[in-house]
Length: 461
Image (cartoon, rainbow, N blue to C red; front, side, top):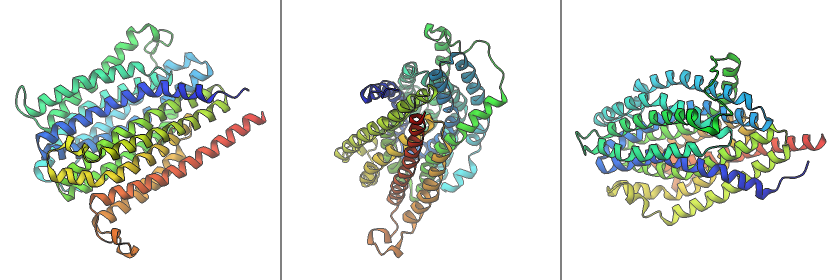
């Protein structure tokens, strides 16, 4: 088997990653818009969006992670030339989305135990509950759209998703602003952002269905024809592969959610400053996430075609591109470190907290790209348990625990002056940086072992 050209592989990954990146920027653009709009409206509404948004993202991404399993499954069918299996795989993902929506909605409608951890100001808690209620109604639409996204990514056609996401963010920004600030009626604050999210999430699902029905490109797949009932074996396969993927997403996101909840004890200014930095990190995270998705698709298609050399080169090329782009993003953040917080808030105390966290987030962006790309490359091989275990050990076992100690107590027994006193929100970010770097090392080692074994087997044959 001839060795595939690295340049061809890189162009293939970038051609997939570019529209995925734009789609994800549009998706996080709604969260950035909510932060900007509520940040200029009131600190209490910004704190409600920070805590409520963190809870929603934790729940949604855990469930979405399960649905993402449909993408490598479909990519394997594409690589193997089994086009007749694509529509059934998508239909099972739609059923899974509906099943997952039930527990997700309940968690958002009844957030009492999680909000109790935050010890929120009564005004902030009231706003947070109202915001979460709107997001609970938005969740089923979001999950159905993610099933559509998994289909389009799996067949290597992410551009329709990009267009739909751009349409939705263009609707969300003015609508959220109008509802939050009361431009055309009563000022709803954080609830206004939640109601706008409800509208655009169902709009995205409707546009996805419209594309499947009307696009000539999708006629060969017939995704909505000969609709299947839920199949036990197919649902088990999605859960077997997607369960660890969803748990990995939940572990990563929930660690940030727990941080936001614990930071709430430090006051609204600390929550707002942390939210600004989390938003900036979220924007930067879109780069490795898009490259990881593109790499996963290419690896999955290569594995489906039994081309181990192409799968190996796809994984390593994606890892190299992610490292280079995340380093560039970190440099840009560092150059703009004194100006970015001003965009988000006019509160001097909030700006100071955000600025103090900039050096840590610059390093975090690079470390996070490594572990993200390695995790997605392994997903292309349908290997999901090992990354999930690494995430659990590093993010929950080390990151949140040590972050709590550093933030509220310090570590005087270390003998280091910088760690001896409570560090506040900086303690959480320092622990998160170290835990993410550790996860990157562990998952990359697993990937290298898999690549060596798969390539060796191919060569032996």
